[in-house]
Amino acid sequence: MSNRLPPAWAKHLKTQPSSRAVSPKAAPPKAQPKAGSPRSQADDMLLRQALELQKAEQLPEAEELCLQVLARTPNHPLAFYILGTLGIGYDNEKALRYFARAVAEEPRNPYYHLSLGETYLKLSEFTPAIRHIQQALALKPDLVEALCALGDAYNSFDKGEMALPLFEKALKIDRDHPLARIGLPRALTSLGRMDEAALHLKEAIDRRIAVPAAYNALVRTRKYAEEPPELAVILRELEDPARMPEEAAALHHAAGKVLNDLHRYKEAMDHFKQGNQAGGQKFDVGSYRRWVDAMIETFTPELVASMAAYGNPSEVPVFIVGMPRSGTTLTEQICASHPHVHGAGELSKLRRIANAIGLKDSPDASLGKSVAAITPELTKTLAAEHLAYLHERAPAALRIVDKMPHNFELIGLIGVLFPSARIIHCRRDAIDNCISCFVLQFNEAHSYSADLETLGLYYREYDRLMRHWSKVLPGRIFENHYETLIENQEEQSRRLIDYLGLPWDEACLRFFDRAGSVNTYSNWQVRQPIYKSSVKRWKNYESEIQPLIDALGDLADT
Image (cartoon, rainbow, N blue to C red; front, top):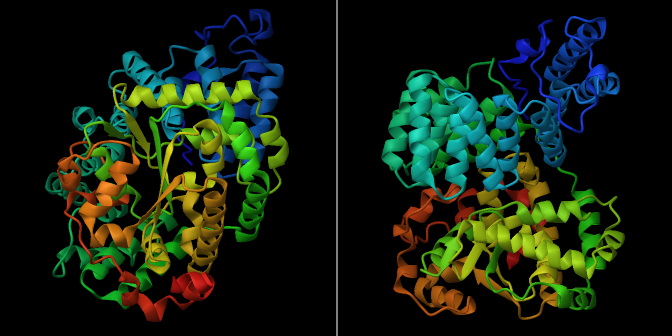
């Protein structure tokens, strides 16, 4: 999470008359302490302490101090703001609510609008994200963080070309700002402009800006046929004992990627393992297994069939699901090359709906009660809102693709909300799939991938849940095997487009020429024609991955 508080922090703590606007719902002015009053000074002191506790990652204690301030000074905007920052990465919905209250109390504070916009962006709510970030820039046009956030928003909204001038403007204001230095090449990479991205990343490295992240991004702009000078430098960077764990993880993954390109597989795997260990991520497989049990018990074929009667009959939604690195990006690019299909990328909207109605991946949640509370009216409302959200992306498209892989967990909900939706399940050789996850520096949402044994056990739960969905929606899910697609691209592509209910278009064979942004680790691969080198890739690491093979059990043989 980010501990960044606005540079205007000191302004709020000065003992001078406040210009804070009071909303109609705020407490009357007499309930607010006057600037310089003992209560105001005490609030200032508590909020400073909250900030220090937050930096020390003592989040419950920091939250308690903010709540103390709000108990005696209702609607204190800075207390709301700090509570919002405490929620980022842990409970983004909670962060959203607090930032919104801070904005309501102080609508002319650009930092509050920026944080609210950034949180909307984390939740794939692009329209309000862009609106609030633009408002931050209207209030403070030279706010570099807001320029970069708007660039990220446009890039995520498949408007990468609109992102570039924003990052360029940010660099003119602060040429060494890490968000701008890394953001510009990230936008270029998503547009397939790898050579330009590499130049900017090398400049960031030369200027010692976000060096680990820059190296990790640089090595992914090309494939190496011979050892580059960057490898020796990356290895030297790893010798720095002052490296933060996340920085060390990025450098190890960068070294591993180069060594893998050079077919030095044992060395590569050593770095991938060290990179994942440096991240320190843990995953509770037992807890996840109990949640899968609850989903299977709750979403029976009979329940989904009965509830689907109130769903939306639209054929617009298309969901591409599966394990990460199973071919979801390639499949989306093939489909989205069709003139009547829009590829929306990885959207978290469905997950947000699921969380709101109580389907969080926690075994403590009473899934049965949550699902029982979904009325026909709520079903219609949720489906209509989701459809409107999709149409924001491409109003004229006949099919709009959400390729969030982990929507495989929510296929029962998809079946309820959209009984006519297409669901494409991407499946790949189990060991290949797992290795492709293990060698990437995923965020904490994918903590299951940081350990080989855990990854294999997680894969078994994914496979178990997908087999259940096949029984719940028999014949409804298109099984798209990666190896089949690689072996016979045209035949499988034609099957995909036919499944979408659309006429064939030759553009689908040239998916790598498609314009638009690609914001996944596959952004280099999907700019190339289909290649077969990734099939049975795991054989290169066979002597290093026995814990994974053992954990997969019989799935390692299928």
